[in-house]
Length: 361
Ligand code: NAD
Ligand code: IPM
Ligand code: MN
Image (cartoon, rainbow, N blue to C red):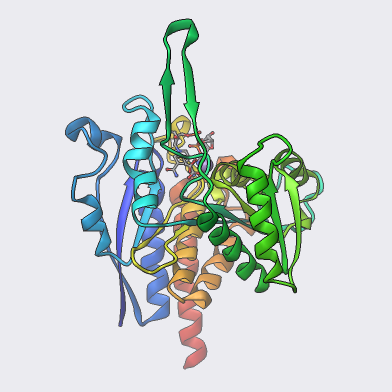
């Protein structure tokens, strides 16, 4: 029996609603496999935890997490309790960095039965590879002077190593997909980091002669996401550009509530972390209407990560059969609850298993 030990961190807001839902789905899908088992251990680390302990996670939290095969996280952030930069740098960004989860992969594609807000979305299917360790998210800087002269300085850090690593990941991915990589740049306005990014992109692309490339300024690229999303295959972007592009990618899919993501530790030293694109969704907490699909699709990415691609595809097919039959939460135009959508997915996983068993006998 293959047993996967998963650290569950529901975190804040709707994270507490969608992580339990996706966990139930993972138990069901493991049964479908027959030889796979998930062992979940839940950690209450969150903004509420911060109020009690003055830290987002215990001092030995990373040591604890290190022992797991993966981390399954919901969302972090509750502005009513803790400033965002404190909660996010105290947990989400801390785990990404300390565990060298240097690549964030975020697919954007149409799901059957989910309407895109675009008039003519065609059939897009793209993958954003987001540099996840540095760039515009840097702790170098500070505030100088005071009052009306006060200035906040925020440095961006672009190393050859990290930029190249993200780009190579994107090219390797494109080699297995549509063989096209688009680089998100802004070298017309940002004069040090972005021309450097372009230079590294050109150098790396020479090693992949079979893969077509183009470079688009982030402003134009954002517009193309809306006007021609079907033209993209893999997009490689810096940390902030990737962040913004993937909420946009989620929006053209129909809702940020359905978009999945994976923070990948590429050197195998630490666990990878699976958490959807969306945040804690403060405006819908406790209403029972959070879309569980972002977290469930994220679970599919975790299955893929563990080499269970077939099971992952089956799970996504089942999710699509559910959306296609009109089981939709309000963010994608339906009236169903988190529980109704989750229960329907689990029911169909069980039916799928029953059908497979009948076929065998
Ligand atoms: P958000 O993604 O939480 O919400 C944006 C909009 O999307 C809201 O209208 C929300 O209701 C909706 N939405 C999000 N998830 C949904 C779901 N599963 N189903 C249905 N609708 C959903 O973004 P925000 O409002 O900018 O951030 C809220 C908090 O979350 C902040 O504290 C922010 O810092 C944090 N945040 C955390 C993460 C993370 O932990 N990975 C990601 C983004 C934002
Ligand atoms: C995301 C989030 C985080 C990010 C925030 C909450 C720090 O928006 O995972 O997309 O910007 O990386
Ligand atoms: Mn984001």
